[in-house]
Image 1 (cartoon, rainbow, N blue to C red):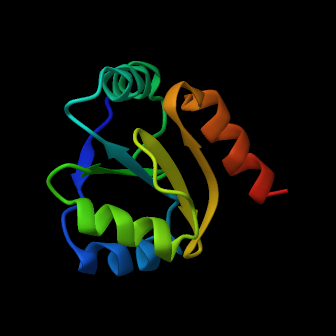
Image 2: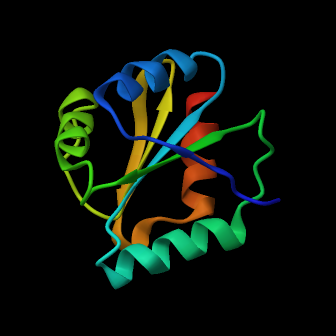
Length: 117
């Protein structure tokens, strides 16, 4: 499957994603275009992505352009701000987060499965 990133650019998007996560799990990917590790993590997600559109939505947040929004995401979901970083949002809560090269599709799937048991 191809990964289709949805834009994440504003403080309003935080609430929109929280609300949407009650219908479908939402992945937030915090990315810096100046970081090689970010590029590797993004590539790995895109290359391995096998979620159907109704299984998970993926949001892309550029931490350089939208730094205040990225910092608010960390505060809202009570995680330490890092980049690259993924946050898995389900029912308005961050149920899983990972950063750097710990970002893998396998770990995301495990985090998602653990909440549904």
